[in-house]
Image 1 (cartoon, helix red, strand yellow):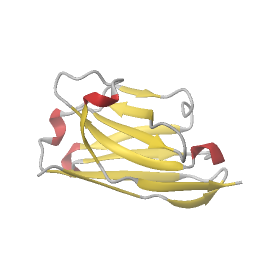
Image 2 (tube, one colour):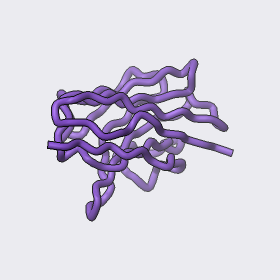
Image 3 (cartoon, rainbow, N blue to C red):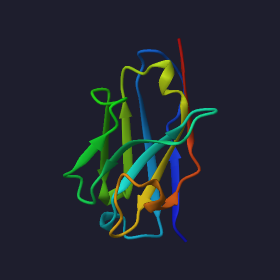
Image 4 (tube, helix red, strand yellow):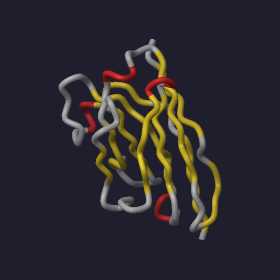
Length: 124
């Protein structure tokens, strides 16, 4: 019943910006920590950002800190990832995910629902 649908990816040039969206349904959205992850070809999936249920607490991976902002609109059951100053190294499929109640945000296996992903390609 739970569904996460990412959107907003695309092909951009280095230095451009994108805002990714993840629309959730089938769960009490404002009860859950949400995370963003990404996976580049041939690489392991890595943590990008997470945000607490009310949006007060956020954490970012060092690789994107200063360029990326995570936010959420609980009225719309949507979490966002604003990415600025994009680099070719940001090229990946980006996934949003739901952290289980009582889960530890840094543990990927504690995220119980995942979206299908949206492709971000940054050309140089």
